Image 1 (spheres, rainbow, N blue to C red):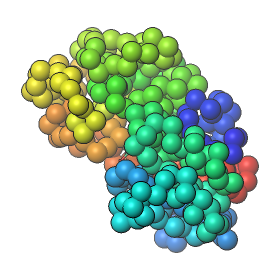
Image 2 (image 1 turned 180 degrees about the vertical axis):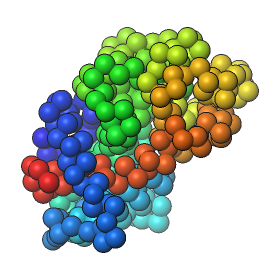
Image 3 (image 1 turned 90 degrees about the vertical axis):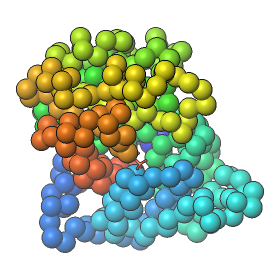
Length: 305
Ligand code: CP
């Protein structure tokens, strides 16, 4: 494995399977009453968050603590970033405190890549702008594998705001590496211009794709990143691209529904679909801790659990 985890596209099939298999072994730790291993004792993990997060920030902290690492949580709000301190100077300050790994979420695509040039420790991308979120893709693949078995040849449909979604890009790259067959469904206005270069198919007709899907992953409509009108109205978006009860009924009986969270309930996904037994949304959060344990373990600790 590389020293850093910046893009899902940097993972070979062997790398990805090693992370998934290591997570499978570590999942047993999360099910014990004492959820702790001594593996990373004496190592320091810095969580550097310049953008809001609930799941990713908390799960990286829980993962590092379950492996007995020391954890420093940095949030841009309330830090010297408000006084104009640069990412480089912030990183060097944290480096001086002895960071072995820096987990970074940043609004600028490419920030983790820059950071990797400035620090000696491992850099883990926890979401950079509209670019990538590789540990989300890993936890999604892990969640799919736990429900469905091997992903080889599985039909995965990813629906919604692909244009603003780092989750979609990382998932397409990783799922392709793992041998899955990915279809993106979105309005033309919410697809990036470079979509032809992605290793997946594109459709505009959700109703046609649903009956052939093993997995349907709904994406959050990222209103906070929209500086223009990408669709006529929320109602219209929901009518064409939302996963409601009628559409859910068109999916095969054993197909699952995913969402990375946070959700706009009632817009991209109906509440009763999100809460159904075929939804993995809560499992994805649990699996996020396990996958991040595996990533930190393999970057800082060793080759196998
Ligand atoms: N899925 C995800 O990245 O969620 P958070 O923004 O809450 O971390």
